[in-house]
Every structure is written in structure tokens, then in C-alpha cells.
Image (cartoon, rainbow over the protein chains, first blue to last red):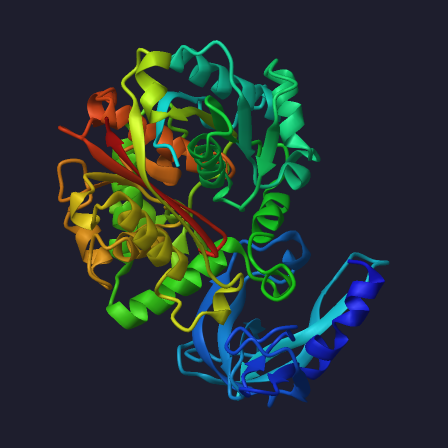
Length: 129
Length: 385
């Protein structure tokens, strides 16, 4: 991944920065330039609360190359308490915690790294709340 | 707008075709379609290809294929809509003929997937999801469909045996298809005991990595009988819709909204409904996809797709024959070609040329091709003329 792309994604990946439509109040993560509900084009940046609930989940046993050293790992779609949904790894799980309805919290973690001299990608992973 | 018909079809063998290049595959299928129709030229062509760039490092595929088909300087376009690229090629060709711009259009699809390793292939396929906000975090394509399966099982009580019934049925159909990549029959136990890829999907719930190509010749319906001796098949309905690129953005992930919308448009255009469809090729990239699609096309009530396949209602001779070709699962899934290959199967069936897997008295058939996690869906309804 290019350095500029990595850098421009910091606000979302590091600070959970969403965009809230100034007209209808809908939250978007990541940000958009036009609201898909009301068509408005002005947004206010806001940090999402880090808490949410698992909507569905899986365990990845055959990953893509950048995640080869992490498999098997759990993933879920999380409904954030502020409204947006996102797809994330779920880590630090005890048995029985990978389930629909499980409350989770996003934490800052290493996502993967591009070999020995490439970019180290950081971002969010969910842990049981 | 003019009515459109298919007068010729062609298909390569599907499989790990080490000796064939991307262009070899496409040209073989295209020549077969041209010969099948018996036309001496084509006016234009559309090539569906999902990722020539990531699979073999080749873009600009429209011009390449026109060149190697010996049809330059005709206009030729590569169209892309992930795994629905083939369906999009068919739609594009139909529009060009319907508009009156061209009379004889070749629509094809091709993918050469086995020149890259497994993890590179997983990466290439994952680009059909939201690369920045899904794949970046580690999700794979089987993983996304696995999350649909978990949600569907939770909401409707769909079981692992019901999921497994999909590949068992499709391999049974594929065993009667000479072009199928994996024609061997399998059992429910084979599926449930096969290695887990993304819980609850086993490897035998997943369509394979495949090299292959498919092609068809589309012409104005009123010229069909003049241009070809083959029995023409009319395209009576078309539907194309999109949904959010990320699975997580959808309010209900147990329904494929684009499939519902595309089908509604195709039904409206054709004046037909789900009860009129005798056979349908659906996009069974994963077992859960076939269950959800048979519900979303209106063949079964929401939540009843699992019990229906388990009871045999989607077998040849059942209530509606689903994936008589063996589907993506048994026939193989060269991603850019699959949408056209589905149409090839329906034409073959409606002509009565499907041999041991023939649906008796088939007159109306349908194809449902989708890209990504259903962010693109393209539906065609076809009828004997």
C-alpha cells in the first residue's frame, strides 16, 4: 500500500472518525460526500463511541496473503452503538463469546505488516466488552 | 427497441487448463459460438472479465480478443462487474442489438485463474468486496458468505445439512455435464467432513477456482431464423441492480436486495412470474448463496430455501430445476465467464440438447448472476421462440 493511502486513512482507522449528515443526522463510517438517505452534502466529523454488538460472525481459516500468519482468526460485522456497521477481526475471545448479540469494544491493534521493510498497518479490532 | 434472441452458444472445458492462455480460452469459446450460429461475421463484441489484471497481468481485453479472434477492426469492449461480468456482457450485447446499432453481437466471458497461487487468488477475489473497509481488515469472500450463512441460520433455522444439500444436488447435475470441472457425485457427509474454510462453510460449500470461457451470439429476434438454422431462444426479460458494496452496510444481510430488484425488473419486462420459470441457473458461488437466491427470486418463501433444497424440490424433476449444469460449484466458476456460461446452459436446455440432464418440456428459463456479495445482480429470462 502507498504511504499516502495509509496516511489518509488514519482518522478512520485510528480514531473511528465518522461523518454525520448535517440535515438528517445519519452516521457514516467511512465518510461520504453525499448522504444516501436525504441527498444532503454537508457533514460533521464525529468520533464514534467504541462500543457495539456482533450482528454476525465467522472464523477465517484460509486467509489472504497479508493475514497468513494470523489464521485462524474470528471476524464479525459489528453494529456500532452510534449507528454505522463495520467488519472487523474479533480478538481476545473466551469460548462462547463469538456469538450474535455479543457486546464488543473497538481497540487499536496491529492489523498486518507488509513484510520486513514495508508499512505496518494499524487499525481497529473488536474485543468482548 | 427490438426483441433479441440468442442463436449460437459456445463453451470451453472448465478446469485447471495449464496449457491454455486467457486469449486461447476466449477465442475457443467464441469460435464455437460463431460456428454454432453459422454466422460468417460479427458486428461487435463484449467480453466479461473480472480481473485480467490481477490474474494474468493483462488489461485492454476487448481489443486483445477482437485481434486474436480475427475480427478487428470491429468495436470490442471489456466489461466488468466482478463475478457478474459475464451477465453484464450479455446485457450489454442485448442492448446494442435492441437499439439497432448492431445486428450480430458476440457476448463472451473469460477468466484464467490458475496462473496465480491460492492466496493471490483469494486476494484478487476479495477485491470484489469493499477493499478498503472489508478486505483490509482480513475478511475473505468465503468469510463474507459465511457471515450471511450464520445470520440466515440464526434468523430462519437453516441447517448445515441444508447448506450441504446444495453442492450434493449440484454435483449430481454436474455429473451429467461433459464440460464440468468436478463431475464426481458427493454426499452430505462428504461436505460436512470436508475441511472448514470459514465457519460454517466447508470447502465443498465453495465454488472452485477455474479457467474457462463462454460465448453466445445475440441478434434481432426477427432476423434469427434468417441468420441461423439453430432454434433461436428469445431474451424476454432483463434486470440489473446494485446494492451496497460492503455487506455490513445492508440493514438485512439475509436478503440480497439487488437480486430482488433485478428479478422484479426482469419479471415485469417479460410479463412472467416466479411460477412460470421451469429452470434457473443461479449464482451458487457458496451453498448459502443458492439458498438465499432461490428465496430472493421468489421461488420459495424467505427462510424456506434450505428446506426446499433438502427435500429435493430444486432437483431436475422437482418443483423448479436449479443449476442443471452443475452450477458454479460442480461445473466450475471462471468468474468473468460464469454469467455467459449460465446463459449457454439455459439455451442448451431450451433447445432440448441437454442430454441426461435435460428438463422435460423446458420452454422458459432464467439466469441469475451476481458480483461481490450481491452488490451487483443481473437476471435474464429466456423463452423458446
